[in-house]
Length: 441
Ligand SMILES: [Fe+2]
Image (cartoon, rainbow, N blue to C red; front, side, top):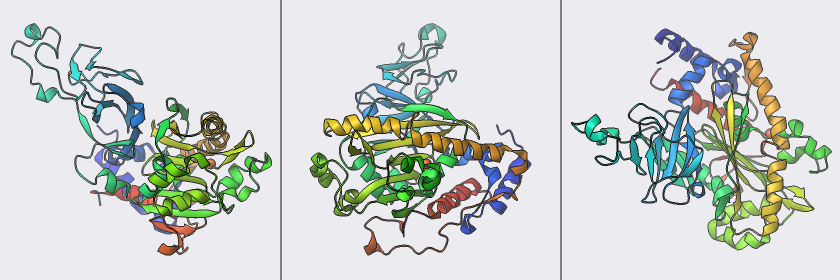
């Protein structure tokens, strides 16, 4: 039930239609923390897009599961006794109690802690006398077992990444990811990857979109917000985030590919053969010049190869995934996964863990800088003064910049020379606005 009446919603929609104009680089500040906007996002953005939930290596055996969130709803991501990965609403069909209260585990059956209704690992309500306690006495006329099947989301995987959507029809995951797959391969498809430990979680008092669009489209902030890297002597100059390519991959997915000109790969030599098998020529060529890579899959799934830094005298980076999980309009739970190549040499694995804790993690230096900015932006949006459509932000960088020709860069999408552009953010907001307003024109 909406907290807003139909008229209230129509007002918010018309305000968005009038003031969100990414085509001219205009995004109004009120959209970040307006509770009415957030309510529409939960329903129309999180209710129907493909959402990233985890990696297959987190649920390795039949019966393994993790609990995750889609929008504001808890879901179980489980591997059935047939080894197939499925996603269920974490709610018993009897009274809606959560079936899994743990973050992860392994089960034969799901047994509701409230009344004991029990489900198989495929989401099926168990057979007579097994599904409900004292069934013969409590339900002498029997139970409709099909109607008690757990609510199931559409689930698909790409290179081990598990996604699900509540949309019963619509694009497949492959179609949804589109051009971004070529770039995702560089992060998680370049070799056999494994999660290092469990994902970390922490809360940030920010609207969830600020970090999402930062990773999709904002290499520009690195020269100022992360200038410590240069002051600590970890990079040569504050322009470490500039060289490379800005990519608008379509569908609201955006990214930046940072390159160096040293003429040799920064990645471990020991893995070169595995990379060569898993990547095509263009991808391999890009990996050999890669200094960093950051991107976001619409709406809130971030992927990252952080800038190579020196740890114990060796240049090291890694592979990280993030989810910016909204917890209301002005609070966000960060989910952070660190991956490493399974067949990597020990030094790369060991120093990679150090790199993770030092750069992008709950203790990461980049995160300290970034979250301070996002928190203050969220407060600005919250302030009554700025809850005014006149306070329009400038997303105009690179508005008239031409795209590169296909023979100038091997990756797909609209590719721009140099990482300083806000083109991908503008497309993000076109998709965002159109999804929010779809069917309500
Ligand atoms: Fe940053």
